[in-house]
Length: 188
Image (cartoon, rainbow, N blue to C red; front, side):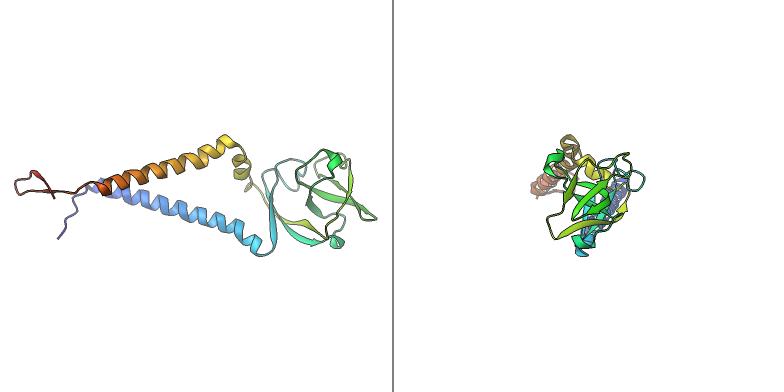
């Protein structure tokens, strides 16, 4: 028969830590599912890092886009695309189509006073068209694009997990002590 001689406060503390860890694991799993499931339905995800669409899609939002045939695009659709090379912009842009003429597109950010200074043709047969957005969910991704933030958010917890694992391993390798009848420690 074994008797638990762990002080009551230590047991409660361990139970609380275990519950917090379980809760954190559940939240991380739900967040991962929220970003994996849309791709199962054919949707792409993009994080809005600029303010050119403010008013309709705010900075820090995550937009979900369906891939549609270019022929299905209409004026008023919001698309995510790479502007032409001569624009000097080499990142994705999410803007609204404001004009289409003979296969050439003109776009504009909803918050911008002027139309984009380029027109372009979509050479692929399909294009990502925004169908929904979720505000604020993109902020963690924007923060994680900074190397020092990644080190703090990912590296420090990973280091702590590794350190705690080493401590537990060392505890497991130590020989257990048993107590003699007189209460003096004796090796097992």
